[in-house]
Image (cartoon, rainbow, N blue to C red; front, top):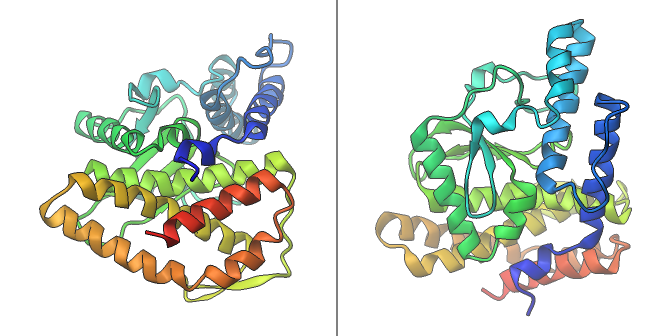
Length: 303
């Protein structure tokens, strides 16, 4: 049975990260020395996308000072908001949801690191570090190391309230999420969103194009969805189930009851996807990717 680390170890993703980082740096800093093969990291890849978005926005607005800042800060100034964690240095910020912009690049609000970025409050940085540690103990450290580099913590809610979280494809490696001030719940949601980032990168890195013609019933949305969204759900939710099953071994009280109810709910929802998932996987042309998606789904069904 593959371990979580086996699921996430897909070499084409590393090549994608390096090549795209090089291309972005060449655009923002023409003439500058580019990273040598094998030296750029997933964090460089994530932060380069923030620099690209920030620089493009500044250029369109005619803001020369901000554009110059991004040229001299290809890491988008990440060190000012960095937090050491068990999966590497992370950038943890807590922007106000009402202040997040919306534009043509995303249907949902988003945040781009820039010269005005402030680090999250100390208790939120501590919460984030504990969440990354919780995920790493369950075997998801590699996933979060490469696909949850920038964490934008939004609204604080109570256990049991609906928690909104999302990613956008233009900012890979960045996650946006509400939280309940509990590191285990935050770890669960980090894994879910990092899973979406991983799959986006995996599809791009392997050159898989999923047909828009095929649609499948999603029990999570209670509607029919294109294969792309269906496969994303059938990957990200099983990952949270595998993590939750592990976390139940070390939780008690209200948190244990909450996680138990979550796992029971997800078992029921996932069971209804078994037949359609096998059909949807036929649309994945890369054997390695297809086997990883199948393995995570199979392991979660067996819980």
